[in-house]
Image (cartoon, rainbow, N blue to C red):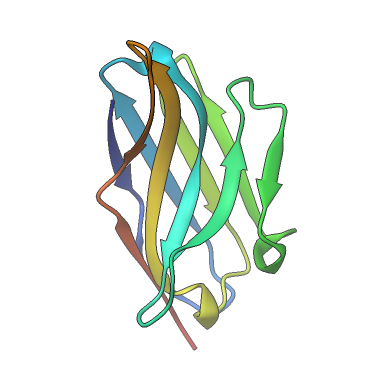
Length: 119
């Protein structure tokens, strides 16, 4: 499975961005998907996750009520709608996909997309 993120950029405090993650390859093997982020000098942090059906989601406390994760299995894409952005949301955002293929579990990663929120 290959993942490609898009949608990052520079936005002002309080603004919005929508990140997308497009999956290709053995997409039928994908189960859960989600987003991590990593700010300079900090550890990578799980931001949000979503199950295959999309009926279960989870968020880190700091983004609850502001970010919404969704997926479109027909198009093999996942999105992260980010509203009311804050400077502390500045980070590189990575999408991931967990799956099971040919007898092994795997986690695939995208290359990352930069999100910068100016104050």
